[in-house]
Image 1 (cartoon, rainbow, N blue to C red):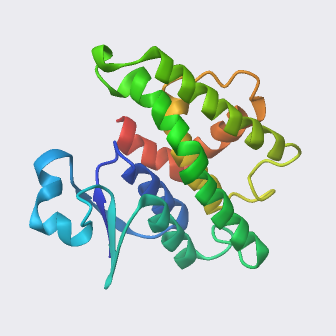
Image 2 (image 1 turned 180 degrees about the vertical axis):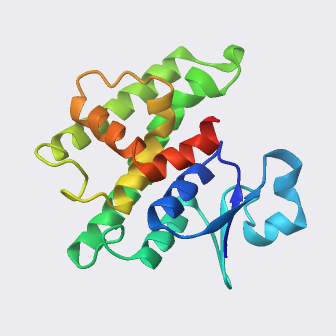
Image 3 (image 1 turned 120 degrees about the horizontal axis):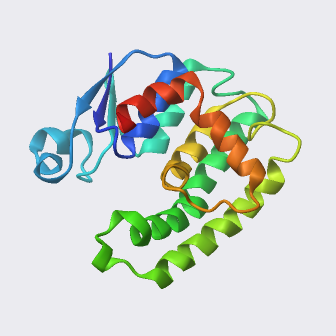
Length: 202
């Protein structure tokens, strides 16, 4: 049985969603923040002292998007396509981590994550601008297709949308990025996403 360590109100949400999309049975090992992350048991599965982590038989993984790629590989197509599209999945997954998430988190920290007295409006604006520039790329890419790789939803959509969940759920101004907004709505209203959202939002 797959074991996902974390809480749905963290990046573990992405992994719960991916497991639902993959149709793989799993248990959520509820692991919050703080002292629990420094316990010997948790450091065994994630030596970084963070969540999430995954156990799948003898395999132990950390990093949410790597976990998702593993779950998708287990499921196979269409969630994890083959050939050149498998490389495109890696491209969009790495783009989500290196280009989108830093800007999204800068906006998030200074908009709703940090206590109000620790927020910096200039930092929030800078994060919003950076995220907007990445959304320009995504908006152009989505022209004429419902998902990142074409007609089919893949783990690339799950990974990138998962990174954007905080912005989407906390009313980031998507402005003229209408394709991006419609794509996120499609992604987050899939049955697998709704099951994961129920845990996170409930």
